[in-house]
Amino acid sequence: MSRKKLATVWLDGCSGCHMSFLDMDERLIELAAKAELVYSPLVDHKEFPPDVDVTLVEGAVSSEEDLHKIQTIRARTKCLVSLGDCAVTANVPGMRNPFPVIEVYDRAYRENTTLDPGEPNEVVPRLLPHARPVHEVVTVDVFVPGCPPSAGVIYEAVTALLEGKHPDLSAKTRFGA
Amino acid sequence: MTQTGDIKTLKLDGRDVSARADETILQIARQNGIFIPTMCELEGLSSPGACRLCLVEVKGSSKLMPACLTHAEEGMEVTTGSERLVNYRRMIVELFFTERNHVCSVCVSNGNCELQSLAQKVGLTHVHFPYRFPGEQVDASHGRFIADHNRCILCTRCVRVCDEIEGAHTWDVMGRGIQSHVVTDLHEPWGASASCTGCGKCVQVCPTGALFEKGRSVAEMHKRRQFLPYLTLMREGRE
Ligand code: SF4
Ligand code: SF4
Ligand code: SF4
Ligand code: FES
Image (cartoon, rainbow over all chains, first blue to last red; front, side, top):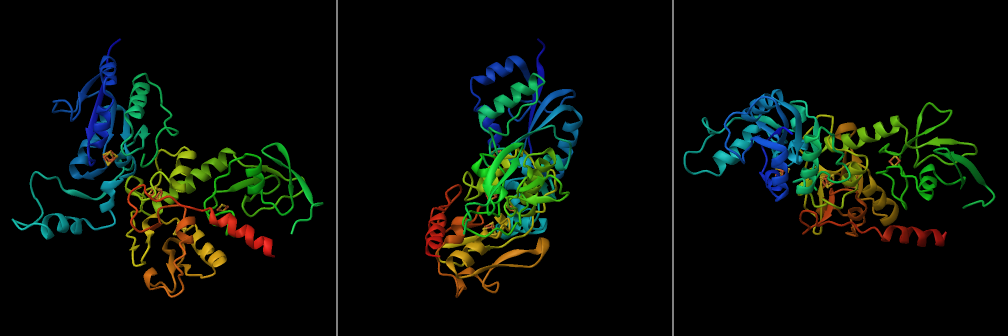
């Protein structure tokens, strides 16, 4: 059996969903037999490749860079999965949304800085007005709520998707789980 | 209160059931193990019919009826779980999530919240409507309790328990439509309220993390409601 192409991406999230992914422990070896991890913060590929079968997205879409990334990823992915509450609801990164971006910058880069206060104008990507759930920006095929979803839930979702099945996870995970 | 002779026979999801004329479709459904989602209704308080989660279809009527306010009638045929109803219910639950700011992972009620568990029960894995992300206030002026309007779904249980059971009527609703908010006294800080007795009944009946006890952190707020059926029973006995 030829291995499927699996990718994971890290947008505006705490990396907890990726930690939960790693918590699959020995099941990762079993997954490695079924899929090749072609792009991920966990491996060293610089370019998101074309024709990826399943991509797990951690995090909300919060910056110009996130927006650019997710659009490319969507175009190159067959099945896009919102993994975790940040991707599904904007969750914790979305807690800045009631405030104007300028106030967020003020709090982070002016009020609490003594050395060279001011908004960063290089390297750090510009924030969008709101951190948004992924599906408000591009089409998402599967939703896995949870903060983070447990390793068991991720395993069930990924194995089903690699077999081309649509997992029913509503009884097993929820917002905040 | 009850005329024992006045028994109605009706059909609930095709099943023949009998009920007293003063019983609601919701009560009858519960007695027969049929789940109808609810949010504003709470046994022991009056029902305002506000949340519309409990809507059911009644044969011969083009309108949907709130099960919590519709009484049994002879020969009635009620459907509680049609595709149309299931869709409407999911939409209502989704709108609760978009109207304010619900961040379950950091909420005092995470794991013990009626809205959160209802979302799971209706199979919600994401919300189709755009989130509003409104700027909402947190009132921590009371000595023992906090009101976090980010988590309020305007069910008005707090308003009713305070008025109908405690008799203080500290809570009420101010504004209309999307501007509606629950307020204490004449929209004064809760801690400055002259009418609040500090009984905490509002906190205990609140279905979400909107009202909670000070000192509770994430997932630490468990609501205790045992007092409500007890108090209602004692009062009915007195009438
Ligand atoms: S959903 Fe939770 S665990 Fe995952 S990135 Fe967001 S905050 Fe972290
Ligand atoms: S009130 Fe309930 S639904 Fe809202 S954030 Fe808290 S746990 Fe989640
Ligand atoms: S504060 Fe709680 S009980 Fe009162 S209306 Fe809001 S959600 Fe309902
Ligand atoms: S429970 Fe019937 S309208 Fe809210």
